[in-house]
Image (cartoon, rainbow, N blue to C red; front, side, top):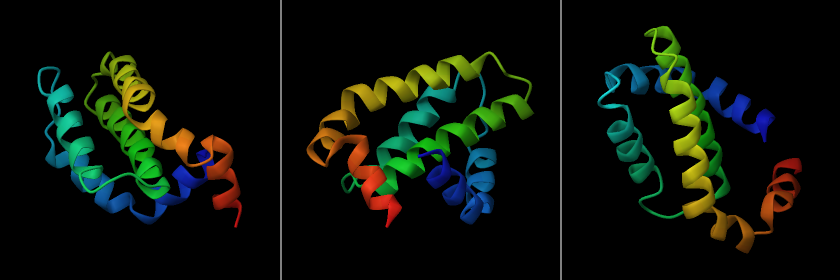
Length: 108
C-alpha cells in the first residue's frame, strides 16, 4: 500500500503540490478543505485507485501543514483519515477482498 501511494504521489506530485497549496490550509479551514477534496474524490464511486489517491492526499496534506509550521494539524489529519477509512470506505474494501484484494490487484 505504501509503495502504491509512493508511486501515485511521484506520478502526480505536481498536481498534489498545486492542490494543497491552492487549498490555503489554515487551522480553521483544514477540515472543511479535507471534506471537500475527499467528497469530490469519491463523488463518482470508490475504487482502489481512489483509495490510493486518498492516502496520498492525506500524506500531502500533512506535508503541507508541516511546511506551514502547523504540525499540530497532523494528528487531526490522521484522525480524519482513519475515521473516513473506518466509517465510509471499509464496507467497500471488505466487499472487494479486503486489503488482501488490493495486494492481489496491485501485485499484478
